[in-house]
Length: 380
Image (cartoon, rainbow, N blue to C red; front, side):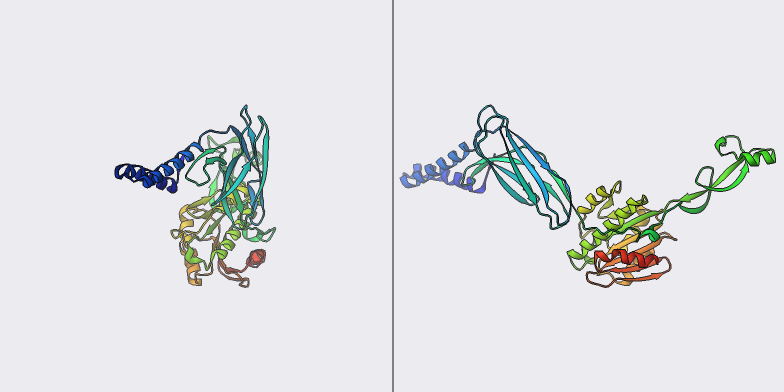
């Protein structure tokens, strides 16, 4: 049970009126106190009792694209042996609140309510928990009973299909060769004499028969391409919120394509790394990414990649229009030697531009639909 500020104020008036009215013999003041006490008592009585409901909150899909409506169903069943009285249910949706009226229900009867949630912005929206509320019309006292658990609704960022646009930049066929030798890998390098303890599966029998002594295969280590996407989350990097949304959509689009191509991926955004097990899971985490004054700007992204993903071979840094070219180069300066680096500056309305200097490419993106064209220019 919760008593509102109005309720506590009314109770105070009741106490003061009754006490002072009796001490001073002031009948009108005592009557005011008695009236206020009666109102408080009646409000408390209206919170008594409890309905026995079985409530089901069912979201048709808890993952939607930005701009789509999320549809849900609320079923309320009377689980008592007697007919229920009409009641009111509250359904919190993010910062908002929807009120649903439930009519009187016979034992075992059910009432369905369909609802739709508009999704104008990327977000993680908490739907629920559903609660029934008993209280007085004045809002002096109320008692709420929770019937369901909250459900997370993921509003995914806008995406653009890349197809083969990123193939040249993110290509990973048989890995990149290193100069490290091993006894087990995909890339055959040379033969050597057999040593006790070597795996007999790697004996080269033709050479062994020709030379008359056991020879085993020696391999060259390969290193799979690891793509690292890093998003600047410092508000100082962006002109407005729409520019940040473009940056998040850029990260999400490249990340989804990388996962579909079955390449190793690391996404650094916010305080930590985003999950990259599947495209939907990545988009779930992208839905919750926000700017923060403590977030890393583009000048710090290179150092963060070195610290958290030192084996990366392809790095894509995404930021807003505020940083200068010097800032963009500074952000990429600390990356490991040999890393293919693309820094994307999101500037709404700007024309696509690409400048390459060695392994570093600076690109400007004005709209999400231009991302495939930008990547094609990077790899051309």
